[in-house]
Length: 296
View 1: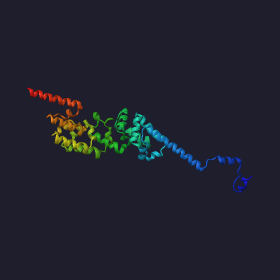
View 2: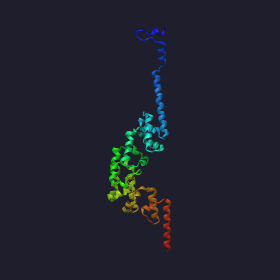
View 3: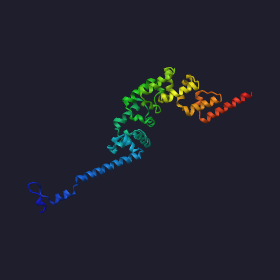
View 4: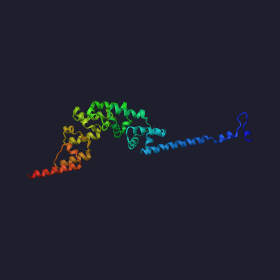
């Protein structure tokens, strides 16, 4: 009766025991907000734990990909399952996602499968090789097929990467290179040395790694040492383009200086392809032969 004194009949219905119970049992706006915040915090923590289980750095991932904060956990699962379907192992998946956290919120059907399709049907990699290709160069997964991969593939095809020289899981990393700012300048540098274009082309097909080396940090200092200190002949570079794949400071200079010290010379291939132990054995054998020849 006391409650009814504060509830005029013309404004509100009678406040019965049923409505009072319902009113008291309904969560308040503050309670609802707190519950939602708690659920959101729990879901966020689940994402962090999932990232840690993949060995992905959560702090780095959130910094590079802010969208990760609002993305549902199912999005992360779907991208991991997508990569797994291509044969990638969990450790490789974690390494790739840690390198490129933007993939964590990618749409497999719009962002990832077109790249797989390009590798499978345009590059014509055998299915088992796709896994090796991506593991070797994860950057492929964040490269646009139309804007990046296709133009580079066409350039490499024209250069001669077809038939027995076609791209493999070892050389598909070339696909992420810019034609104009990366590939062409390297070819032009070699041609500028006085090597014919067709010869440069053959060198590149024999040693595709040539297209991954820096002109300023690799080609130029090694060519200067080869021409000035070793009095080298370009013909030898044509025969052994792998010269550029060896360390100038750790292998080329020390071995060349040892040969000069003892008055010997070797073709580049003999000087560089063998291990340190084999090189030293060859050097000792040459010194012994020299001593024997002097005796006679």
